[in-house]
Image (tube, rainbow, N blue to C red; front, side, top):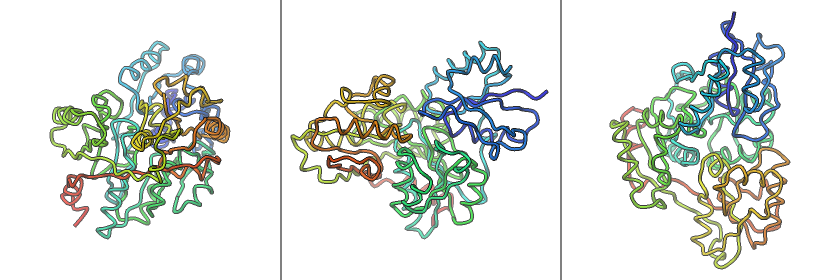
Length: 438
């Protein structure tokens, strides 16, 4: 009899693991996915068109809170953990819950889940969510463009809508974001790449996505999500560690895996981190991956008309994953607002609906508004919260033009940021050493 399987996920790694490891294998029957971290992704069905011939009804996706019941009622043999940015204690707590229900607990590694490309792949991963992967990906793309190399970006999945329609998505311009009905969170990841003139692929079926991307590129750039490891086997692995969170690089799953596998470790956000953090992370890298090159970087911040905000009351909006399950209480928007001399208003008394629940769920959040927008209702809650705050302006630290998605009468001051390499060449040297650059 085939083993009965549940895959624990968050709409990304879970679907990929199913596609490359379980789909079409008669030795396993996947009876369900569970969903966590991301709002509103449970209650769906992984569609038959993606699930394959053994699943004519598709596969149900339920909340992770339903896992004990699902194990019991569906006589589950194996539960696979397939999402990221969990501290190591959380991983074992989840394992204990599975084992208490009688099932096996499984983690699938790179050799079971990575696809092989006929092109060289440079992968950007991280030790934690919000460490600055996309700025490094754009930095890499610019290096390759200056060398005359055609690079295409493949982004870790964010399929929060109609899964069948999101099987393989190609983004070439901002109009494609509307064509695919992208959520605010998806726009935050794709829009900066598109503004810089790069092609982005994403979706659900990365076997199909890889074949499509290979047709129009010389080099592929993997832009990772959370702190997950790549779906495609890299020729060069670059892992980002956050200088604001020393110690997390070995405390979170699977970020520690990325740290150990890295050819280059980029210690990012060094310019705004407390003294001593960079040295602490360097010592950790030396102990777990002494062969890795280390590069210390910061952020070049470009604020729109921030000089007029001194003494004025502002609301600060930050990238939601960074300040929710990423664990940061603030990010670049807050730093820019404080640097401009603005008075940042506490948003919690004015939060409504899903945002009010987010502040309850993540008590470390204080003076920033997470850019929650996984659906129309959450976008309305975000807009209502911002409209209700007694402030003169909004400082947006999200990677997108917030005013394009959230309509408000208050002026929005966008804060952009790019990687500052401080004149260091570790990434360039490794790319040249692997013959990816002349």
